[in-house]
Image 1 (spheres, rainbow, N blue to C red):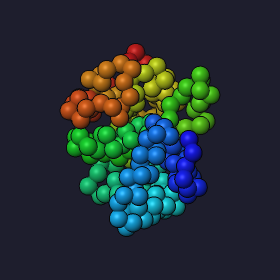
Image 2: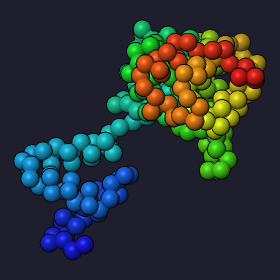
Image 3: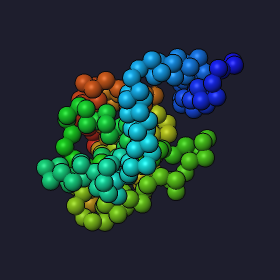
Amino acid sequence: MDYPSKVLSKAVEEIAGLPGIGKKSALRLALHLLRQPSSQGIALGNAIQNLVTDIRYCKECHNFSDSDICEICNDDKRNDELLCIVEDVRDVMAIENTGKYRGKYLVLGGKISPMEGIGPSQLRIGSIEKKLNEGVVKELIFALSATMEGDTTAYYIYKKFKTHQILFSSIARGIAVGDELEYADEISLGRSITNRTVYNEAT
């Protein structure tokens, strides 16, 4: 497609680089921005720039944060004895939206998937060990996807740390097998975290 402006062409190219957005949708979004007051486009540009340059990862749980330690880890009212293991930051947001969990989190950054070349060394399993060695955690909760990869990841972590004197549990299977956690509705996810079950090798 020929564009009347190189500036417009570049904007469309960059917007089309986002997942799920084709060239036609990118052009539509670019033209929409041009029809709005310039302040709106500038605000969007500033927000994107701040997203790239200012966002951090929490040193404790690896959640997104505006500072070195996120608000959840800094919250004295959270239960330090509960550590919920999730794959992705989106899973933290999904569980938090249920309002049913008041413990802490640890974001693995993915799940074991040999098909994709992702092994334990690519995940933040060392951070789990550090937390357990501090001696505060009493229960490790697996809130991983109900997929083969999620189950493999939970099993690996359980085998690695089962000698620790803690309870291992898993969210209840109110989440359908094969589902990603972030797509579960809040009611089902809330019930799953509340009615979690003891995790063992037969789970």
